[in-house]
Image (cartoon, rainbow, N blue to C red; front, side, top):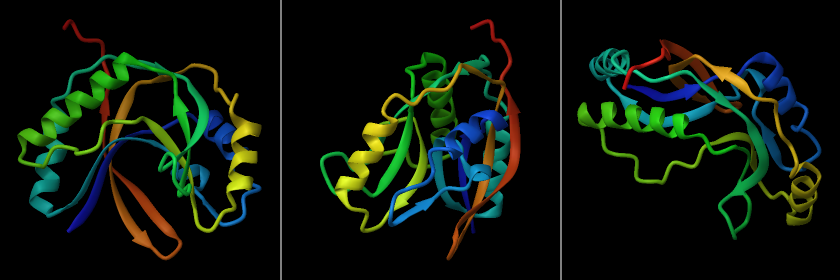
Length: 182
C-alpha cells in the first residue's frame, strides 16, 4: 500500500518566506521548507494498481496555469485548542477549478469523494501543548503575512511515508497546466 496526495509546490523564494515564519512557538513541530506544499486532494492509501490508474487519470486533466498569493495565518480546528498552524491563500477561482477537476477524476476511479470542504492552506506546524497565548501572539505578529503573486504551471502526485520525525514526501508524477480553450 502507498499513501498518496495531489499538491502544488512553491518556488524557492516563497518557501523561504514561509520558512521565516517557522519559529518561536513551544510545542510546534514545524514543516521543513522542502516539504511545504498546497494539498489539492489527500488520497490516502492505495495499492500499486490504483497508483498507476491515478497517475494515468491525472494526466488527462486540462487546466489553465494560475497565479497564487499566500496571505494570512490561522489554525485548525477553529474555536478549539489549536492543533495545526497554517498560511492561507487569496481567493482564486482557477485554483478551485483545478481542485474540482482533480476531485472528479479521482471519484471517477472509484475513490470516495472528499468529505471536507476544500480549505486551501499551507500547513506550517503541528502543535502539541502550545499555550493559547503563544498562538495568539504568533497570529497577531503574522496576520498581515503576504507573498508576491507567483505562477503555478504544474501540479504533482506525491507519495508520503510516515516516520517518527514526520512525513517524507516523494514526487511520483508531475502534470503541466496549459492554457485551455474551455
